[in-house]
Amino acid sequence: MIELIATAESVAQAEELLAAGVDTLYIGEEEFGLRLPHSFSRAEQKALIDLAHAQGKKVNIAVNGIMHPEKMKKIPEYLAFLMDAKPDHLVVGDTGVIYLLKDYDLPYIYDAETLVTNARQINFWQKKGAVGAVLAREVPFEEMRHLQEQVTVPVEVLVYGATCIHQSKRPLLDNYFNYTKQSEDSSKERGLFISEPKKPETHYSIYEDPHGTHIFADNDLNLIEELAELTQTGYHTWKLDGLFTPGADFVAIAQTFAAAKAAIEAGSWDQAAIARAGEAIRLHHPASRGMDTGFYHLDPTTIK
Image (cartoon, rainbow, N blue to C red; front, side, top):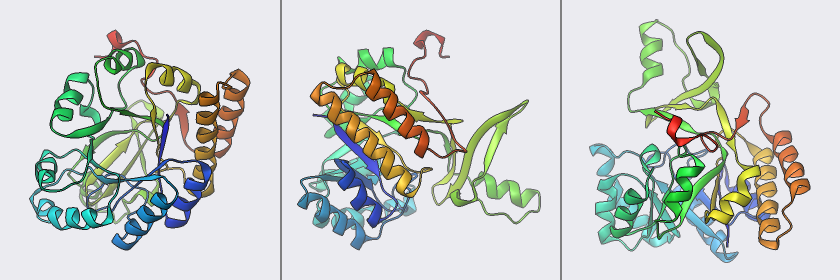
């Protein structure tokens, strides 16, 4: 059974995503979750958990920030709220939070971003209670294939959306603007990007929030043509990230992936269906953002 997970930017969009065929909503609040399209209130989180459960669907809550001491002090109160709200999983990367979870009946999925690259690491955290893991976006398929043969918990793969390639706790943009004596907005809504020296065509989105500075890959990921291969290899947990794809367009893309999931499960996923799905995604993907398959097709021996 394939599980389709999607971020949400509002309660209304979350309802639309469930109706479009998404199995699991990925939500949270900015205080504790990384790079979320929206920071949901406690009341909204509880309402969406109840709504999803009423439809036989799930909600995962992002608690995957790097919890410095001031945030760690707030974690027990949030975990107590989540115990009452009853999400299906927490998505956690900080070992301090994992340590605290021993006192709470809250299953967690291990997500340490770029660090999750091998089966030994996933199996280690499985022994520490993790019921799943989020694979780093930089793992080529050849390594993914070998990894899947060695793990015993579901491994989530990003199949659509932006890939964060760097995060710093430091407010790098604000520091730059202060140094150059400029007063500028450094939020995601500003749409800032940086380019490599002598490569003006590169377009790395960058913004700041309470977790620091986030920089994203030049192109967003789209693995619509690789879904059958992923399924055959045992990767049945697919993530859609709508951070830079807002509103109805993201719902339409989620519906396209849900249709692909149904076709694969029914044995009717063929080249014509792949072509139609690819065109639908291109139609709704932001025109200002490129797409590619990231590290998926790279030869692992070429990565240094």
